[in-house]
Structure formats: structure tokens, C-alpha cells
Image (cartoon, rainbow, N blue to C red; front, side, top):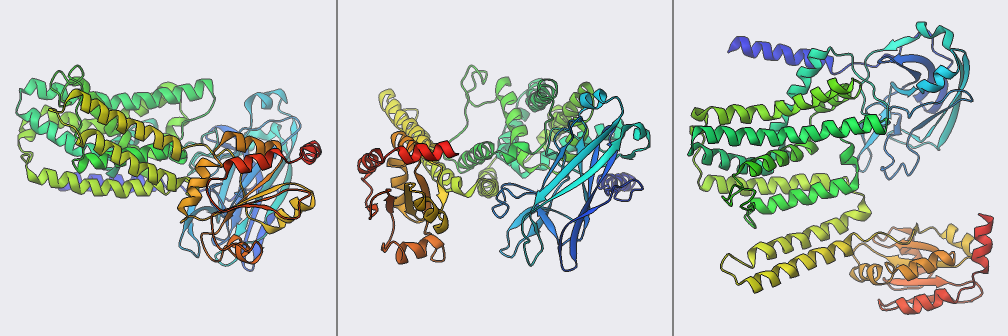
Length: 600
């Protein structure tokens, strides 16, 4: 045992060392650098160099600077607001693929919020387009690279910048270009940089990545179900226990087979790569996962139980059939994805740069790594018999995990844009009520007519609330800015100001019954009205000050429409003014709107 433990420790040390390669910045063929930003002793500069990255030719934009000066990495960061770090290459005879950015680091701003930034020394790789590279027949090419963004330190943020670097690449010297064989990155573009691991080591890494998924907190929703099923299987024949366990493993492998298929489709038909974690950058997917975990928490609390149709569950009605085992294995794999370790990212980075057969094999091996413990457990009845007997402890365990799931759901919800978050939370409450209504208001002995009525009402309520809380925004509201409003009025452009607040219930009602109407939204666009959202949630907000001092209004909600040619604006302080607003919009002359659109 000691030798085994020592071997495992030795392997982990080697793995950690291999997975943390330092980006090389020393070079003998670097073009002249240019300073991007400076604040006191903090600075950042950049230079260009042709390189090979994992056998892919391209341009390395090498950033060098101090750790405190940083650039925003994500467009979702509120402070960035479109000023995240951007690198764009241009040439008259050479084309480029999307730039590949390194893995960002987290910076804690003065408010305590963690934001994604690039800082210190790092490399952005711009791959050459292979076809255009062949077309120039290894001649010289003039290249221009523009770098733009905002640089900040822990004390101050500097003005937005845009710097230009120019160089000439001699493709006749391509054999002498520096080769960067390791690059710690999270794939942002369509090209992939791969660590220089051997095939055997990378496949072992993929296996360990799959094995690690069994300890992910996000897989906990199905753990009690799995344990209950294994305990029940132990009371049956050995052959059936083994077969059901293997079908559960098959469900896990099916999920990874879907990932492999997606990877093949993306690479063959779309010439891009599947980046692990991209699904968690999509608000729609994050919302779905969050709601799914909340529903699973309700299951843990006993609000409902999971049963399958008899045709699927081998007529057992408890989900213990072969199809039920496959489904639960698939679900276990899905729920493990939000909490993946860095090892999973490294494995996927390697996979994306390999041939399709080898990459597909690595993905399947990850699935085998996750499924192996269950295959061992179900094939050894002796281990099954040693599992704890079902009892009250399991019910308490389920309920405890229900609270853990709610914490995980809250963690996921932090990735949803703030303007959508409140609607997701409202819908989560309504959805929970509908599920409780569906399962809790009726039983097996309830009359069919009553059962249908209750469940139709529950379904209708869920659908209606979904339409209400996830209705698309029809009006492109602009944030309150007094200067923008004055400029629009000076140009004789109509202005509609909606004064609202996060704590205002009537404001939400107005949004749904007035500003979610398609006819009103269409009129606002046709009449070239400037729609302004004036947020008065806090006293310090500019709109709050303007509401009292400029517009002399005591509170919200209130909507104000400035019409060219009228001395006084139109005001609506209630909630039932949709028809009046529509009539006023229809009366606005279209002449100014047509002139403005023509100028644009």
C-alpha cells in the first residue's frame, strides 16, 4: 500500500508539473515592441513574432508587463462594456484565423467582485490561414496588428487605447521560426493550441479526467438514486445486478459519444473546435442547468419522485429497467459538467488538436473513466452487500444534498446577466409551485377528471409564466444619460423616458402590459423615438436625482414622452396607459424620423 501511495503521489507531482507550462517570452527574433499603457511603475508592452504553435504557423503577439496592470478579458464584464482586449491582424495578401487567447486570471476589484483579466506576461496567437499562406508561395507579407482595450491597475483605469504594430514576414525563413510547443490556454477562437503530451500520457489524462467526474458536486443529484438502485440490485440475481450496472455505464458512455459526435461535426462541417466550458458561457444553457438542478433539489426534498413509464422501466414503474439505467447514467454525466476540474480542460485542449479518430478515442476513454467505478461495483456482489442498508439516514442524506444543490444552482445563476437574473428567479419559484401542484395535489386514487384538471392548470401556469418571464425585449432601451437626451431633443427627435426601479412591482407590470406590446415597440422604431430606461433603484443613480430635480416627479413608475413641437412632455403615472401611449406615438410626424434614418 505504501508503494502504491508513493507511486500515486509521484504521478500527481509529475502531472501538476506537466500541466503548468510557463509561456516562453524570451526570443531572438522578436520585432520591435510598443508600449500599450503605463501608470507609474506599472506598464504593458507588446511585440510581434512569427512562430509555430503545435505545428501551426502563425503570429505570436507577446505581451510583457507588470502583474498589477491588467486588461479586461470578457465582454460580459460590466466595466469593460465592449472594451475587452482585442487583437486584430490585417494583410493585403494573407488571411488569418480567429486569435487564440490564453487562459485568463481573476482580479478582485475594490467592490470585492472577481473579474476575468489578462495581466503580466502572456501570448496571443494568431494562426495563418493555410490556403492563403500557400497562395503567396512563401514570399514576404506585410502585416498590421491592432490592439485595443482598456488598461487598469488596482488604483486607476486608464483611457481606452488602440495601438498598431506593423511587421514584414519572410516566409522563406519559416524553418527558423521559433516553435512554442506548450501553451496554457482556454480556447476563445476556432483554433486550438495543444500541449506537447505523448499520446499515452494524454489518454491516461483523459481517463483520469473521466474518473474525477465521480467526485464532482454537480453529479450529486443522482447519487442517492444510484445508491438506492445498487442496494436494490444486491437483493436480486447477480446476473441482473451486473447487467443493470453495465447499462448504467452505457448511459454514461452514450453522453460522451454525443460529445465525440459534436466534436466531429464541428471540425468537419464548421472547421471549429468544441471547447469544454463554452456551454457555461451561454446564458440559455446556464439557465436550463440551473432550473434543472433546482428541480432535482425538489426531488431531494421529496416534493416528487422519479418514475418511468412501465414500457421504459421494464414494467417496474420505478426506473429500474434497462432503459431507466441508461437514462440515469446519461443524466449523471450531464450533471457532472458544470463542476469540471482543470484536468478536464487540459484533456479537451489536447483532444481538439489531434486527428478525429484519436480525439474521439480520448473522449470515449473519458467516459470509460467515469463509468469504471460503477462497473466494478455492480460486478462484485460482495461490495454491493457491504453498502449501508436503506433507512432514514438516506432520506436525511437526500434532503441535505437538496440544500447543496440549491447552493450550486445559485453559483450557476451568477453567470446569468443581471437584467435576466430576476426573471429566472421568479420563474424558478413558479416552476417549483407547478411541480408541487402536479405531483402533490393528486394521488393514485384521485379521479381521472380531477387529475387532468389539476395537471392542465399546472402546465398552463408554467407555460404562461415562461412566456411572461422570458419574453424577448422588443425595445432597445438606452441607459439614462442627460446629455444624450438633450442632444436628441436638439435634433427634434422624440424621446421616451421610462423611470423604473428594481424594487418597483408596478414597473414590472408596465414592462409586460405596455412595453412588451409589439405594436408599441414597432411604433417606437418607426417614429425613431429614443427609448431611455431611467433606473432609480438607488438614491445615488443619476436618474434618481433627475426624477426629482429635473422632472419634478415624486416617484416611480412614470413614463415621459417628449414630442417635437410641443412645449410640455406627455406623462403617464399609472399602469393602464398603453392605448394612450400608442395614440400619442401614432400622432408623431414621421418627417424627422425619415430624415434621421436617411442621414444614418
